[in-house]
Length: 305
View 1: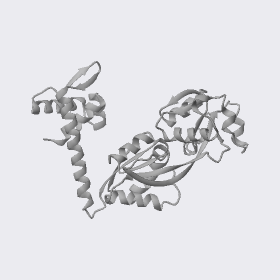
View 2: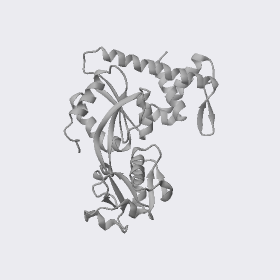
View 3: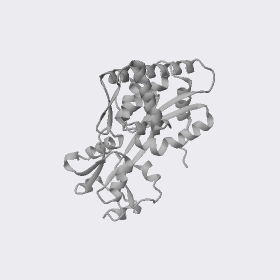
View 4: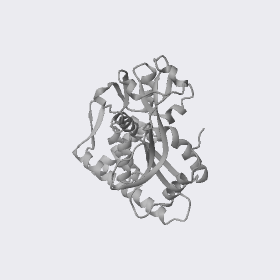
């Protein structure tokens, strides 16, 4: 059995799309179709059927999907176990990050780490804080960096990097002049504005809600005009004049005047949070994981472009 058949099949089930799977794997769509047919020939049963524009597994296909995932996990654990007893600097590292560290901080850190250890293969998932915590807890990710701490008995970690929360407004907003005044703004002065929030599960949203609650402001007291699924979507919504938002100062640092948005200091000691480094609670870790954790602890400042 070629293990690549399982890899392809699992991805087709997850994407429900042959062409998308082919693009991800760098294959032609006929090649993907041929691999699925090879599996059906091996087991002598239909595995996938079309439902509208999507492919869905048959009952047999669902069973194969569950078992194929387990096989791939075992193969991955085997590779990691072999790496643990290897003396080389080769290995793998699976990272996960919430949006802000994943998009604005980690790329530069990963680049510098790879310069030191080029033989370590690195992958990174970006999702909201809750999802990254869950993936770390299930040991599907080696190290996560998230915008809020979530209590979970399966993980451990530490506060890593401080982050300031800032208010962003369209450049024609009444508060835009405050950008360079240095005075800052009180969140209690923003009750009558329209708000753009990140989705539930986002560390940035949780931090913003905690800041508002510290001032006695609940979500139901605000006019929440839109909930957006990413920081980029929040920036675009504010730029379009839909409302105002609280975001990480790291996102603002990378804007460099490219958008019609003004950022304003929030005059509140609670307008701060930490990013956290998290990892599965376990007795031993692979050398590649330990090397990355050591590198994070030794960083003197965050590298940038």
